[in-house]
Length: 457
Image 1 (cartoon, rainbow, N blue to C red):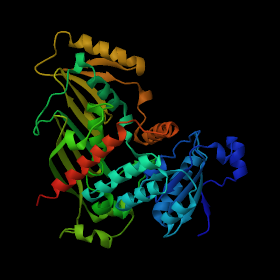
Image 2 (image 1 turned 90 degrees about the vertical axis):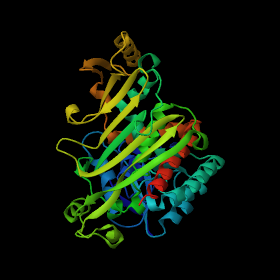
Image 3 (image 1 turned 45 degrees about the horizontal axis):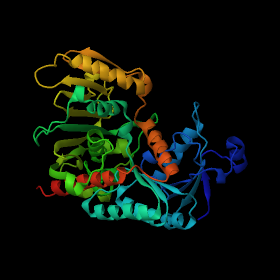
Image 4 (image 1 turned 90 degrees about the horizontal axis):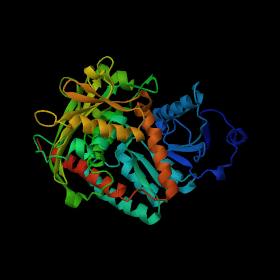
């Protein structure tokens, strides 16, 4: 297969003139493997000083590859802060072997069809590449064991395997986590029950949406749960991560001792032919989806679900819902509740909040303790040293944490933040000690939820 260049036509001389460096000066050289999801492109929404502007893409030919290349090109040609990526592609059925044999880079970005993701990760780690993988790394219980072995192999090969957890960079989530550590305000986590958990997080997503200012075209396989992954193993990966990260910051978790998955459910989102065409451009359901089409001609996509589990004695529940499209003015939405002995920390994103994530503090029980406002004001003032400009104001029976607009970056920007964080880990040559065991724990919860939900008729 001949090398083909896509995107902005930049000669190597132009690149050297632009960046004043040779390829040898960059510590990171990206390889993008089979980019079937728009998240692969969002990693390249910004440039990074230590990353070579030449990116090698290995993929089969088709609309998904073209869409990825167009997205990167849109970043190169935007009026404000354009990027300067030069894309080189290897196109064909043997793209995975070509990537392994050529070793044109040292970091593989994987974001696409999840059916082969375990294979992609395994081959990449075995070949000595670092891997930055979009969630989820694994979507069924069969993949959990191989993923654990990949982490072991990554340690032996001295490479970093990491998943893209964008929600850790949402400011309301960050401040919720910070306040949960303020004992004078929050107290400590209550135990809760399966019916009334201490931590509850819900995420609502939409099939029809815009990305980078353009209507998102989804591949047909996105609606095949064997390829995309069901609710909790897919989007639920983010939510389970937030529970672990928010409740036990930088603490190492062990799924064999610290976790008991109690129950899980799954249910379908109905997608009619007109809706399917709107987001895929296809006039009919492909053969791979026919088994999920009911007698009325409606595609039943099992993209909704929940899981309840106990984590170090605390009961938690997460729920994922997919709707076809959002109400006017709304986007994907996230809500969260953390319940403490002194206060509850609430993230709400409904019409009342104009669909913007908003963090509230609610006194626990029947009302605020006499000194509650004083302690809350003091805690927020201390946090404002780290996050200048944040404040607190009364909002009925609640207190709202006021957040300057400069911190509200949006979902797409979080991919660059994750990437920048990963690049720091690469420079250090290691992940924080707690990250790998906690990723393993997270994927145990999501795959065990899959197993339990499929036991139900």
